[in-house]
Image 1 (cartoon, one colour):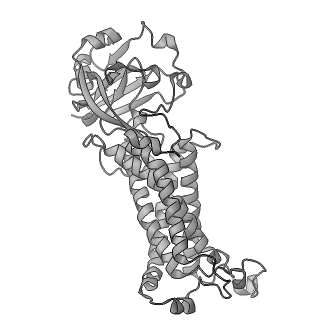
Image 2 (cartoon, rainbow, N blue to C red):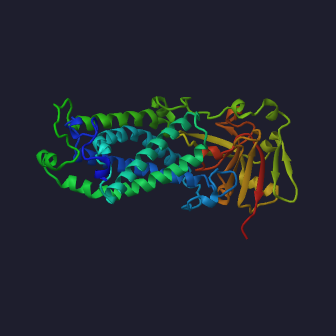
Length: 409
């Protein structure tokens, strides 16, 4: 390989003397690597849990083809009610706070990206392949996650599918890179003294310039950046008074954000007016109910969080009719699946399915009021779903039809 490419490296970053910083070193990179191991481990685990919470095996719940999906860990539960708020809050908040650490880590290993010759052995080729896939997938995941939180889609592919498979690539490359580099990390932690590190360290500058900041200063600066992002976003996941300090949150409404208004969803005023009817299907006959009919039924109140994939959550007192009561009214009291469809026009996300434990949970409601007041139209008037531990996107707003099914013998 060296004979084919040439023994002498090109000028610029391919030559060791190009890199002058005295801060780079195996010890610094190992500290940043361990920090990334913890933070990205949390992000990866909670990301796959979030996908699990979408119950992609049920109709309309995810665009990922279930036949090509990785096996789900379990059927998503409704206990505790704050489960999804916790997992998705960690996923988004820790993921964003990881950005400064990732940038610092990339800076610390920058000279290794310009090795010459690029590949000298199969082991090195495998290592560089893992680094390429790891860096590319990490940047892709963070970038697409950020634009999704802003509801801005400059790309021409489906975010859900791309983000899911990007996570699979990241996890695979991260695992490979971890296995390849862990011996180096352990060796760096066993070393004692800067002089010894400098002699043996492939990341150390051959002709270092005078330092303008210490390694501790760099780590403190990186930690401060991560902490600032953590504070700037964490309040949206905690909710309540903490939302006021979430100055980086994409939706800063006090208390109860709105991701998509009725106007943006195409729900026109005449659809939610006096002629509104909820249709229950699945039994021997269809049942049609006005909002007044629903209000005349036994009303239940539950204090439940609603949590969104963008990372925010809000806990409110919801009042409405139990979904299990509606199943009995539809003539399918032992239903183990319900498809909930919205008044939104065709061609947009307008339906989601609930599994048996979700629809039979006594806390699962077709909500008519929140905090004792009628739902606003932007929050789903005349009726919306609210189910414990369910992703917000599946708590369908402007409910039009509920189709109950008994699929298990």
